[in-house]
Image (cartoon, rainbow, N blue to C red; front, top):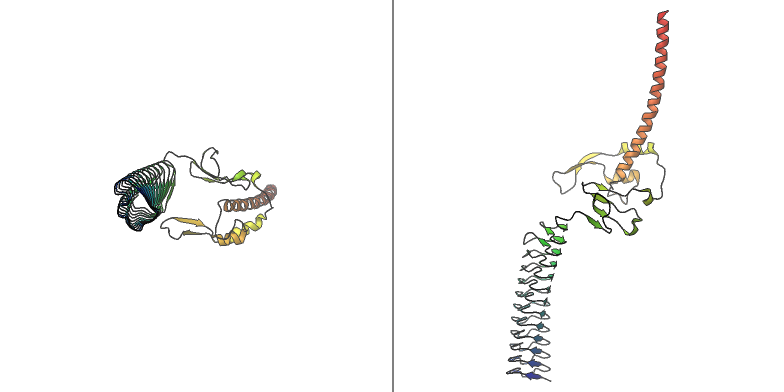
Length: 358
């Protein structure tokens, strides 16, 4: 069943069925298209064979010819679409320039307005992804979020003007009011927080310049802590933090520890002496050198940590302290021997002095 209300609505229909047209020239050119709904002047005007389209608003989907499964609500929403499929546009001129783009969603005034061939984009908010032309797989939520993107893909911008500067960059993520990149072509860059700015690719920025404390799994309550890590109840000893002065600090309270064992400090000192201590740099770095052991030797000697590839900041210092204690004990013993021998020497000198006076 076909329904038409308005001057020349469904004027050219031949075999198309189950269409509904309400408004001047709505579905004017439809011939065989089916299951279309057009509400508003010139809505779905040029549709001929497209199916399952819904247009509500004057000039909504007016250029659509054979596109299928599109929904356009608002004046000139999806105005230029010709063969694009499965798009949804809600708002004045949302997805206005889309011609062949597929599976895009635009909600808001001018959302995805200039999108032409881009696919699988989602824009919610006034002018969100407004300048996108052929970028794909982008998600924008907020006023002007990712608004200046043209061909970038895989980007996520959530918040007022989030990722606004991006044009051709890809797989960037900006979450927060005005969270953004500082140039238009970065990749794999992430900025999270109000006015957070990331300036290099493959980088992450948490917060803006005013943020002084960061917490992961916990609130930062430790005095002087800039970054703190914790888990529920901190029962596993977590809760390490970075001081405002830049020193990494681990939880070391007895309340977080268990399974204590006595150490053979002499054996530890012997093992320390057998370690290869050298100067080296990490692969991929240019001029940053370090001095220390390799994890494989360290793990084999002391069996601490979780594997033989990494060293914690606690274990080398703990083992060094155990070695120092052994050296102290040895020095004490040697000092006692020296003092005893010195007393014997002093006694002998006194005897010699007595003998020399006779």
